[in-house]
Image (cartoon, rainbow, N blue to C red; front, side, top):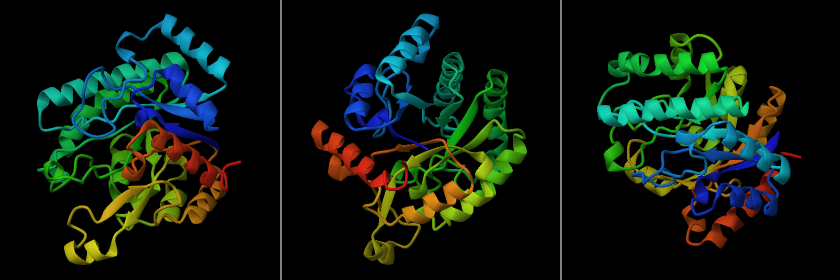
Length: 302
């Protein structure tokens, strides 16, 4: 396995500076954020370390030279919008930009693009499955033509009132993944597996790894801490009873997680996704979060 980090945590850096940070903090690779240039409406979104809107052979050559010179790999290109937003204009922008990210990945010879399926939070999953097929059919077909696999992030995106009650991502659980893979047969769609999202949904991570071993295309390393007192007060349908943490600072059983990954033969990237507010105040705090995460995860990744 290769240890990496998600570049969203350092939006102020250029791509070359991100690579330098990876060298300094002893990471093997980086998941590079490819949002459209401009602001976004949530934390960790809107980060553009690679502008795919004008990405061609000259940019490919420069990036390949950077990878060779710095000896830091690319784990995947990442773009996490809501392609099933109830706002048609938001859906269109997300879908069209995702096609450009897929094109850029193909030009680079990079096999995986990570993203969200999306969701209209006000509607039941069953009621928007036809929308899913209509939006995602062309995206999946385009990825197939380009020989790109899509790692679906399975966070429910249910953290705030504007995401209530259903969240902004519907690909959240094994039953839905099975149906998704039946709807789009073939190997194009898979998982960008993150144990923190399984933890607070009370889904058995090693069982997921065993069942979906051939669909795990990328891994995010993020922990989560469950607050039993808030859970007692609010119940599982309440908000803010679980908190993202650095690996090793929450309730994920990392030994069991990596044991299952190695048993199934996974040998791809594992990228730290820093969303721990305790390490967000300054750039030095965020750099320290990467150093600390690497130190912990090197117990499992040589």
